[in-house]
Length: 184
Image 1 (cartoon, rainbow, N blue to C red):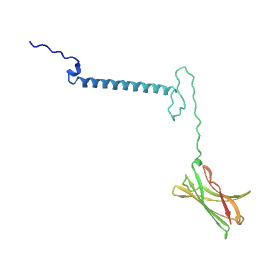
Image 2 (cartoon, helix red, strand yellow):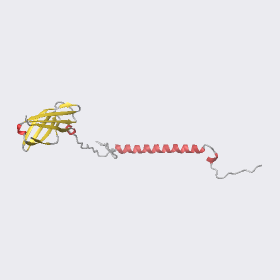
Image 3 (tube, rainbow, N blue to C red):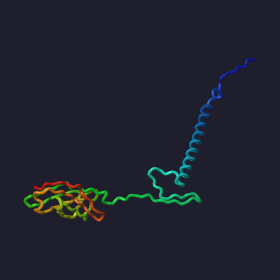
Image 4 (spheres, rainbow, N blue to C red):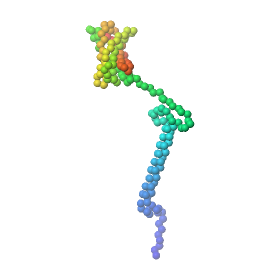
């Protein structure tokens, strides 16, 4: 009879092929289940926190909160600044020309942010306490409104004036930055 050989330092994984892979696969499955449970718990806690107004997402506005039974009811509406429709418009006085022979000031500009017929363009010409004004209808030009104005007045000759283009419609009035003009 042959002597029996005992092998030391051999693990069951080493003696049984495929057991290592099976053990690794079962550990991966357990980890997936643990992560899924942790995610479900986190989502449930977040939902509870949102429902009771304890957590507010960045950029979110809560208008009212349903409190737990017996808790006092607190409701609020945050102040919201509303923009006037004219806040989105920009008026630019782009060109002006003085014709000394006819004592006429020609001016043109754009109203950015609106393309409409029916608004009113005005040119206000001021110098000290004196103001001269002329108006005309705005005209659609592509995606803007254009203004073209002529002001004939011999009193403008030889003076320094501030020119401002004003556009008004049913939503309000918008002004350009003043432009200083010397009319010689």
